[in-house]
Every structure is written in structure tokens, then in C-alpha cells.
Image (cartoon, rainbow, N blue to C red; front, top):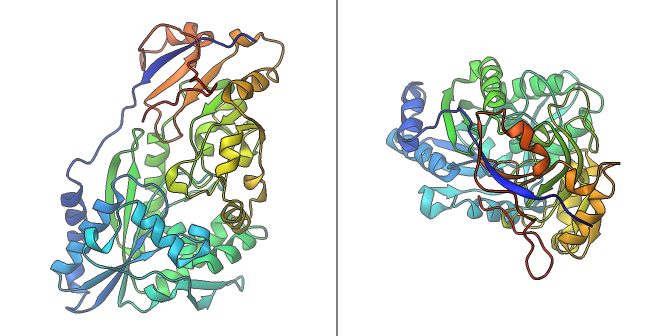
Length: 420
């Protein structure tokens, strides 16, 4: 079979960037005058999640230093639901992978899967809260605001989700995802979030919005009484700044790597267009990928391949790298069992691509629309097939970086990955 020839292009995204991250964290927290509420010697629990948030260790460290300057005693709590295999050791390992360590951040990390039930929502749902955080005098909710990969609403993934799923740990994540089968996402978010804000001594939030280059675009300190209204506005910015595929219609999308540090679903459904249905674009999706080929997992995901079930194809080395237990725990906790299903696999990428192209319809393989990306966070430079050239010529935001050439395989028949 003849494959499409590919060319490298560069996308231009118009988005802001925070250059002085420690200074911005300090300025944002200072505007809330938290010293008026925090007494010297009081403890502050700071949340740290499992997503690969840009500059997260620097952000957490700056928050730690701000509270130390107020005379407080900050400490960090892993806030990541069932990730890390649902164990304290696994979650500590994830944080260490992001350089969130006592040595770098300058404070203790208190990791536990234990929760306390602080109250029940009007629907009767028990509200779980991290035991270590519950024992603090104050809690800082730190998290990235972005579109959720499965739920839709005025708020999706951000400060509220950190209060629910992150600080709810494995037990909270399980009950809330079950509750979403009976109530809307917004109902659960509001109900649980209101209880946490009322009962759990949340002193502030630190919302992070990233730009399309996987850089910190905005950091904002938010008082508890403004969590909902402000998160609505931050989500609008996050949607606007989201990286995109250069073209809407794709016959075959090749993704070099997926992982929990990239997205909750391994690859962002807002990018690949499978937010509403695992295997087909709907009228609500901005992108339509006929077939998806996942080539590997990130090192940071520690074998958690949650989301691989959205792809039709993979290779055997990816299958061999999957930690089936960790992946199953995460998929079941999230109420998304299909995310852990394994695609068709072949020994080499060359065999995978041949099989995938053969399922794309009547158009001959060399003329199909193919895009290769590193992952759904890093899409400044991507590879596209020759079939896109007429559209490329009409786009001022796309720069052609080379001439069309045959797909680049190594000696083992595997595709050459795109660098970040």
C-alpha cells in the first residue's frame, strides 16, 4: 500500500503568557489580603493535582512561600481522585514526577486516601473530603480551569472539580461519578461544591488557565464566594485558548502519546472531537476524526492508559506498556469503562497505518487526509498529508515548514515521533 506523503506545518495561536510566575502568584494572593484571616502558626493545605499543568511545581512553591510570609504553616495534599492506582504512594509518585517535592516546594506533603464525610447534599449524597486537608486551619484550592473531556456546562474542569474529585479522593470520586448517572453534572458540582465551601475552611482558590502552547496564560486568586461566577468566566477563556487541530475533518489522526498528564482521557476529547461519543464526531463536536491511532503512553502516566478505548488502532508495544489494573480503576471510578477498552493492535506502526487507511472509505490511501500530532497539549507543529495543501494555501495562521515527503519510519517499521 502507498501511504500519503506528509509535510510539517506550524500553527500560530494568539494567546497570552505569564512570564513572572512566582511574582504573579504572590500578587494574586496578596490582593485577597489573606493575612487578615490567617493567624501565625495556622496550617494551610494546598491542593496539587495529577494533570500535567504547566509550571505547576513553581506555582505551588510560590503559594507555599506566600503563606510562609504570612506566618502560616503550609503543606501540600495530593488531590487527584483515584489516580496513582488509588494509593497514597502512587499519588506521591505522580507529584514527584512533576517536581512537587518537599525539597523543591519547601513544605511537607501529606498524602493519604482517607476521607471524612463532612455533610450530605440536598440529594442525599455524602460529601467526602481529604482527611489531611480537613485537619488544616485553611485550604487553598489550586487547579487548572479548562473544558472537561466528558461533561458540558457553565463550569467543567477547574476549582469545583478539584473540590469534588480531587479532595474527594477515590471514595468521593466514585460516589460523585455514580451520582452523575442520576443528576446533571451541574447539579452535582453545585451541591457538593457548596458543601465544601461551607464546611471545609476554603480560604481561596488559585485558578490557572493555559494558552494553546501549553504555557501558563493566566493565574488568578479567587475568593470562595466568587468561585462559581469567576470559574464560568475563566472557562470561557480556556475554551478560547484551547489548542486545535489545523483542520476539522481528518481521515486518520495519529497521536504519538497519550497520558493522564496530557488529559483526563489521555487525549483531550475537545481537541480530537470525541467528547460526546467515543468513536464518532457528533454535531456538537468541532472536529471529526474518522480513525484514531495511538502510538504510545507518556512516561508520566505510569501505565494508566485511560482513554485508549477511544482509539480504533494502536501498536503492540503500547498494549504491552498498559497497567491494566490502574487503568481499570481509573476508568471505573470515572464511570467510563469504555475508556479502558483496548483497540486493534499490530506489531509495527507501518502495519497499523496500512490497516487504518484501509478502513477510511473509497478514497485511495495516498489521497487521504492524515494528521500526526505529538499529543493534544503540544500542537504548535504537526504533520499533515498532501491532501490538505489546497486548504493550507488559504490559511494565514499556518506556516509550511518543508516539502511533502514519505512518512518517516525507523528500521523497525515504526513512525518517527514529533518532538514537543
